[in-house]
Amino acid sequence: MTNREDIHVDAFDGPFPHLIIKNFYNEEELDLIWEELNFYTKPNKLLEAKDYGGVVDATNAKAVILDDVYGDLHRDISNILTVNRKLFTSGVLDVFADIHPSCKCAPLVNKDVTKLRYYHDGDYYEPHTDHTMPFLAFSYFYKEPKKFTGGELEFPEYKYELECKHNHTIIFPGWVEHAVKKVSIEDSDYFAGMGRYCVSNFMCYRDNDELDKDADDE
Image (spheres, one colour):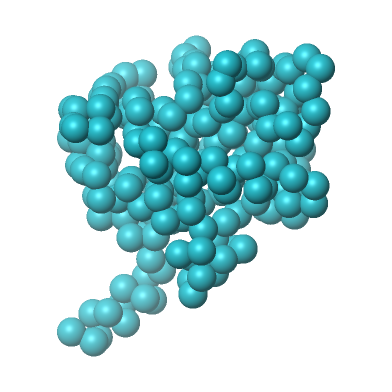
């Protein structure tokens, strides 16, 4: 799948269903994303795992949940929360849905949480699942030329890993165990932001009581 923005989508049914999207964001969108990434890579912006709901014993990478910062009323203030709606409007979830019957409901997701995470020297995330979320989308960014090594997205159960390339997005089911290999950067200040950024979308459905309310209203 390609379009005039040079998005390229590769669909894989093994070793588990997943989608890799290359050049997902155009230059204008990337500029907006970087404005916010640079802002959050400053002192006292990103949080420890215990403060953003991360698995404390599994990761030392800092992050922030953008939905918690901006809430429902002020989402438009965030460049990332605005630009990443592209996940739901570009048709990529329709492509993902066609990979395997277990992905069929992906275009029906109507709720998501966006987390911005930054990996610097020595940062990692041990194997875990996000089994409460039907689908995950990870978008990767880093300053070029690339200064770090490591940081691959690893799927230990399948002996499979993916290099996290700039402006690439991967979508896969939340039940798939995944990890991030340790990042290494020599002679780089944390706040220079030369590490690995991941904008994660945890995609699900509205609570059943909300769906029931909608049914009552119709």
